Length: 383
Image (cartoon, rainbow, N blue to C red; front, side, top):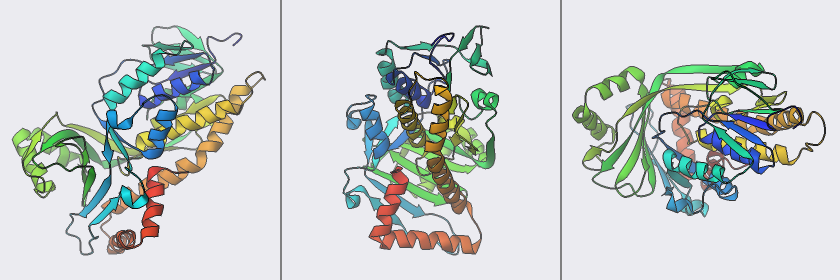
């Protein structure tokens, strides 16, 4: 660490950033984590079995059932009035020999567990400070201080300073659609089933959150969502009743509703010249197929593997880590990005051939057990 303040600096205080800082420190590196305080993240994350297995192996959680809610089924309902409609389709984890596809976690609870794990690592220093500039191995902080490390980990989101300063090119596509999220209490529980009502402008999805509670993710045109939210609680509940086809009885709001813009982001490479990108600094998708944080945790797992494979006693080790990491992530990022983008655009497609293709695909999944098992594996991120 001669001439440097640390072996690695991790920039970004979200879940992927904290997980990355812990993984880097557990690999034996003296680590500084720049994690400026932000507003509480009241969203939830549906983490599939491989992601949960990683969190348990990394010591970030213990029993997932004590922290989250099991996702045992996925039910898809075509609620459009299109000429060619898809069949209602049910995917059951038991069919794949699993107790659950994954678990739905409150991000706040996950963050509490991650912070507790980070606090136990003597070689991990967390600073409530943001980065304003990156030049080579040197980072300038908001207070004018400077830090340096041979390895820089960018976990600083879609507008990543680390990515831009490293010269890693990103492609971003903004959608007219946005996502409205909130918590609902239902008169009739949905059990362990995630229920997706597919509408022309995107899905209206209820994710189990225990007892009679469900997390709502509603994707539609931004103007529609803003107007629905501005109409007030009573009008919003009436809209939710209509969108859910009144299948679950009375609905009450259990939290405020928030609207988030949607876009996709991809990079040419997830690492170069001693810089690696994890989480939304490297990829971002609409909340379709539960891929966001799942993919970010696969980033972290591959970063840990790249660090374990490198001899840090030799010159240029950080450059080799970044190159190895980029190679490990390339196929997964391309495959997952293509899958989510194709799925999202298929949900919005109005052309009859596209409708027929999507409906035919769901019929095939409904009728062919082998194909369903392959879909399970892809959706859960098995590699």
